[in-house]
Length: 101
Image (cartoon, rainbow, N blue to C red; front, side, top):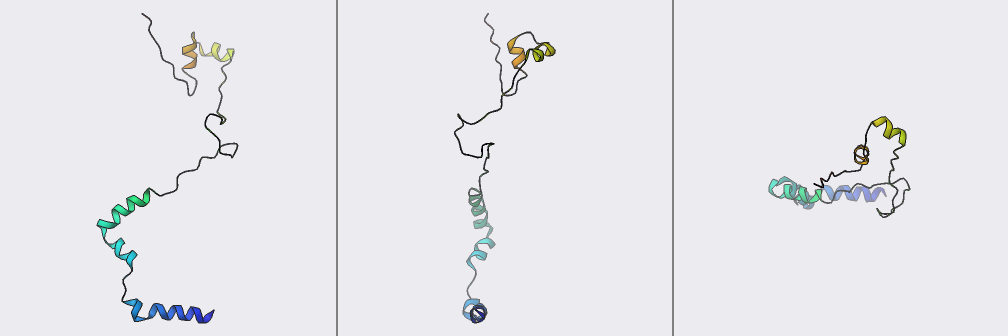
């Protein structure tokens, strides 16, 4: 093992390898090449992983979703008079008012 380490150290110090330029350093030193490559490398970054409560992959149509319950006490306390007014304050619900006149 010691002999391998010594051989590797001697190879690094040899004049034959000292004359060869490092290709990675050469590319990184040129900004015209480095910038587009950096943009391209950004495309390969890890995408975030979404973990659900079940910790299993599932289709969106079968995944558990939060549910809101509006009780009669909630309706009475809010003072709203129509279903549209009550649903306006429910998360994830959009109410469209249509004028029939």
